Amino acid sequence: MATLGIKPGLRCTVSDWMNSNNELSVTAEQRRHLSHEIRLEGRALCNETTNKTLWGEYDSNRQLNDRIGDITLWKKSLEACAEELDKEMDALTLAKEAAERALAATVLPLEVTNECLTLREGRRGNELVSDPVEAELKKEVEVINKAQQVLQEYIDQAFKQLCLLQEARHQLTLDLQHKMEALDVDLSCLSLSVTSSEISLKPNPTRVPPGSTTPQQWVQFSHHNITQAKEEMQASLHLRENISITISQVQNELEFQRIATRFTFRKRIHQLEQAHQELQWQIKTTQDEINELKEDILRLERDRQAKMAPLKLVHTRLEYRTRRPGMDLCRDEVQYGLVEETKQLSSSILALKQKLAQAQDSLQALQLHEARMLEALVHKQEALSLEQQSMQTRQRLNSAQNGFEPSAVLPLTNSSGMHKLPLNYTGSA
Image (cartoon, rainbow, N blue to C red; front, side, top):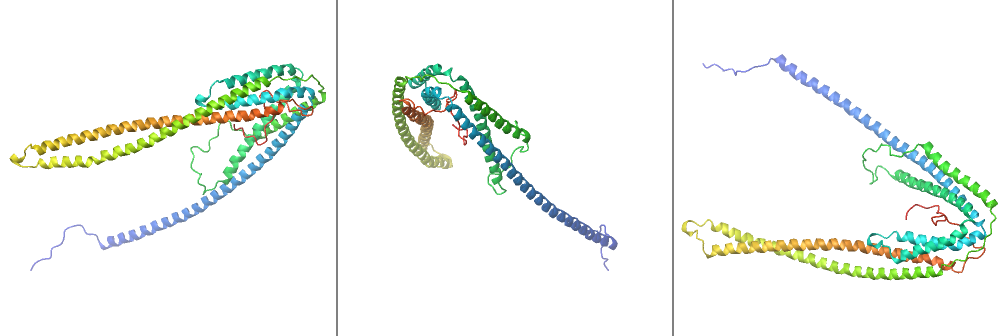
């Protein structure tokens, strides 16, 4: 009778088997319990961070609203002070009476001439030339300055005070400009939300920008500007009470220089218009040539691509013919013809590549020169526009050729030719 063989190997007992199953069950319960706690903590953390985020955004919006309110209040104070300062400047100017009327005959030409010179400084590139117009304008400034020297001693004290008032006005304008820019920035920040497309992560957003000030310094700066302006207005008030000056009216002889300047302006504008038209024609012909060259480049590229298939055919035929056995591997006329065709096709492709590279280089050179001409065209357009603006500015002189009426006292300008800046001045050219 055959005996039943026992499979060799380690065997565990029933108790070990039960302990193993029990350990698996206990471990599973522990892991599930731990996972459950983690999920609960994660949900609580999500709720907590969401509430903090919402509250932080609300608090930031509230602070922005408060800041916008503060800036608006100071902006209104600066505007009110600037308006008072403008009125005081006009009042001090009117107090000069005869001296102001004599100087007014030269102020407007000087202002217009300086404005023309300033406008023409906006020319760029090769258009920024020292031409006869600039020489005539500078000569006109010299003539006006000589006429003003006769009257300057009578109004020196008032002029200095007006300069001080103008400086205070400049400080108010600069402060007001900063307030408006800061107001625009904070309003933009307030308009942003988590769904805005402009938001993104920034490098080191919590840094303190150089030149940052404290709220106290911010308040003190605007307070100082207003206080300084009021002090200058008070000084101007006392000066107006003490001014009693009558001087002889100065007859200005600027007509000859004005006509000469106008003639050189018109001549220069004519030259600019001719150069502008010539450059436009050159740009058009260059662009036409560029378009034709682009078409030729496409044609060369198509021809080069079209010769790749015949070249592949020749290469394939040559490769196939290497499989001829024995004596049939003959260098026959076909072989020579295929080799010659390969050389011819390769030479054609190389020639096309070279010509294509040549054409592309020529296209690049044309495009670069086109860009230069376009830039020059922009400069010429700008220069022509500035010359036309200068001519329009000089039309203001037409009203001053017959002198001023006794009651038509114009406000005295400062040394820069500026009278006063508007309240909405932004500092842009």
